[in-house]
Length: 325
Image 1 (cartoon, rainbow, N blue to C red):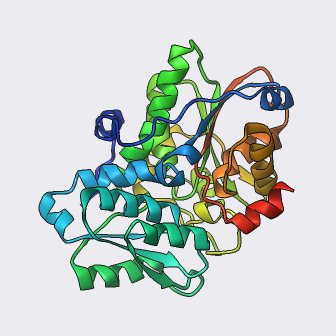
Image 2: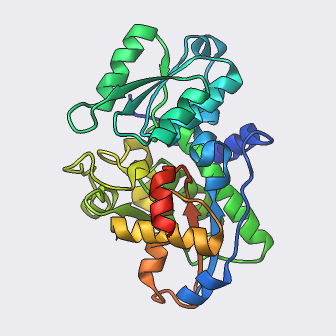
């Protein structure tokens, strides 16, 4: 059976579901960033979202669309940390158990926060084990429902509310974006945001931004087929490391996205530092990828109106202390 591909109406439905539950994060401006890029930049800081990332939106929307019977058997997910926290927090709101499969090298902060929401954490070896296979074992033991971090129609629709809010706020300011940069791992956020932005601003160019050696989306857009990464670990941008694009999101993204942008780990860390000193935001490396892509471009897009999504702020405190000095 072919998976159902979400559309803009699903995103609007998710917005109704999330009303008064998710934080409507603001659209920010910063003169230093505008001066440095020569562009009119609007920043969507999902680091200010519940659990510190956009992932709460998709997690809550997905769980809300399950039957009470399915929810009662529990939720299973796999994640390096942000989807884990989103699922754990959303499951707690629905008073249902959650089990999360996390890589053994996941940041301690993300593991601790996931457990703090009441979820059970099961570890796997990112380099030698397949997380989906590990999650399947848990499903067989618990009989719960698996909610994929990005290859899930309700998750994508929920993430799309980020773009819907951006579109509404830009329209209220009489602004039309020329391009949008989105931190991209499996492509769920990018697909959802793409649906909303393309619906409102059909000429806006949407760029996925990925770390070096994990640019499966950029390569997939070029080839037209799902490309896998050779490595499964080895970047400071842990939040956006995935084996390959999700099938559902790629079906959307291959029609909507412009060229992919690749950043280095150092550029991601420099963006974390910039976000702290200039934007006064705490951002994790993967969540800073879109900002890094914009800073990398310099004044290449001078004079344009540009949106960027800062997707998460769950950075290890020790790493953060080293980076911002």
